[in-house]
Image (cartoon, rainbow, N blue to C red):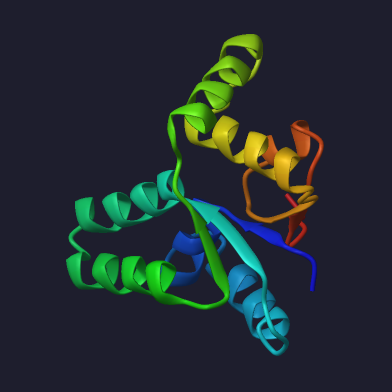
Length: 139
């Protein structure tokens, strides 16, 4: 399987049963996880996911998600070093007409560098940046 980027929103949708995208994420995950996965994400995504969960009172879930991302052989967790952060920042600066987060911009840079075309995400910013998201949103 070619590498796929794993975004914060997808992780949260899988983990939070009342998330608006939980059902779509769960159905999609059941389908794609039947075969070996080659997932790529960043330390910024890890930070966003565990911080969000912990801030909502889900500390044990935050720890579980963090450990899964850190330990899974299916996940290539890229540490955002100074060079990647600065490249993401430059992308952020250039796109004043968008509402991209810095985490999104770093993700886009990593995807471009790595030749990744698909993100497991619900964030339309990935589509605006020229990538494909799965599962496809209907709204």
